[in-house]
Image (cartoon, rainbow, N blue to C red):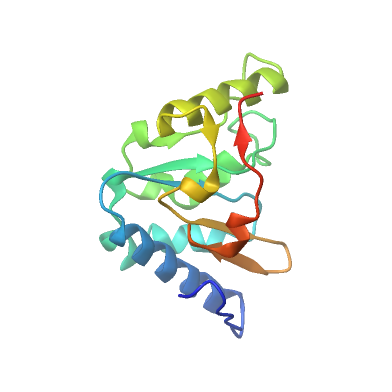
Length: 169
């Protein structure tokens, strides 16, 4: 899918199926280890359910994919409002994901600022750099809004080229 393509789909189910195929095909094409930043909220839940079920479950290279959260609420992981909990229930508990490939935002035993710093350090460790720049990622980012508008951005997307670099600080 070219970065300038636009697809208008008839409903949320068609969107979830399209996104599941896109994510699966993208991850199949990446050799070696890759990382996915998961969106939270209720909109991506159906996507996650599809990824954990055939035929997508059988195609995804689960052992090579590391799962991170692009957003999380600072609540316990078992709280109904937790994006981690929703993702575990919708996908991760039903898929053959190695536990060491699940990188949750720490939410217990620290203040939010400490948790953010700890997660930044975990991301830096995973990527092997202090500079966290989505333009250098070998994976894609998917974001879904409550209105079911979705952006699926491959690493070559011009939208990512306009992002400022994120780094330690």
